[in-house]
Length: 175
Image 1 (cartoon, rainbow, N blue to C red):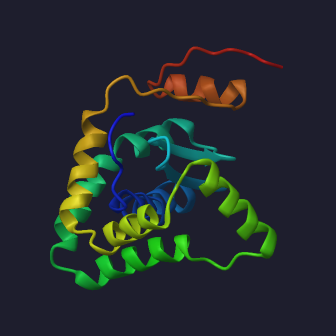
Image 2: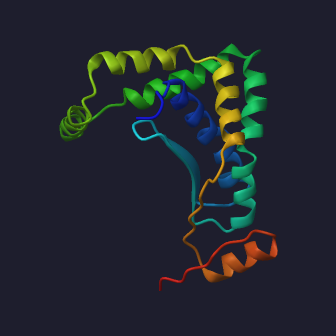
């Protein structure tokens, strides 16, 4: 159902999370964590932060991700070492050391999803063949995204501060 997801999405998503998101949400924004993640099996891409003191600024960072990726695509055209580093990181995520129980769990999930060794090899090849144009394509898709959704779990005062900064939310108190 839907469209095929290229392995290059793993490279781009990891690059965005370990660079732009980390720098802007964690280091400059003061959140305990800031990241993004892409789930290739279901096609869901998410931005996340936690223990974040700057909700409005973080949302602005999310909104600026596409422009950052467009700039990165341009920069990577002239920096093959940075592109290689991004690719190596994504391969490392695939091939990290696993305990026996993690190996069993991973194989079980692959079996349930009917994921073949050939599919994994194809995905790995797509990662290895990632180009700066893949970053640009991902950025264009982010820019064109319609009807995205947000969910925020935070204090009421954080919502009020974000509202003062021009962000609008439908607040639903759960506790």
